[in-house]
View 1 (cartoon, protein in one colour):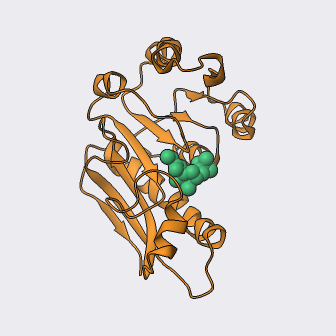
View 2: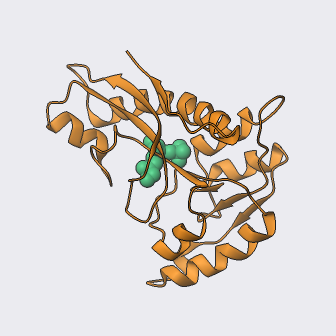
Length: 191
Ligand code: GAR
């Protein structure tokens, strides 16, 4: 898992037990101070951190540094979870078809940042989150699951983000279960 070290990463780890077809082999974070890393360690998952700030204006240098621990862990599937860095197309292509990401919008709407504010400003009736296969284009790639969340009249970006995050915590584990079992049909939830 490549993560900022936040809540989606922990939900995936907590779900990978019992009959789940996958097991977590590594959490790799770009933030050595991230709160979720200590918890991941407590849950018995190996953790590595490479601070992207040690590689100013050197995206490929950062990627070379994470590739060591990543390849050593021999993952079959890589989940990006709360990971806010852009990966180069060379890195993404190396893991084509087995790297997933969660994004807080109903893709293809609102790739990039400030998704909730943009959905509210556009007057949308609903927002949500998407899990997708990662391709070199940012926040694009085949959709593996979406959860829809109504936008309420008094919503602001923070309130909406909190309700979408609740759905992210259900959607990503559900998609990973299905994907790890070899089923790429999308998980679709919502009102
Ligand atoms: C979540 O909404 C997640 O979808 C988003 O950051 C929030 C915090 O996640 N990730 C992205 O926008 C990735 N580009 P976290 O609690 O898992 O760190």
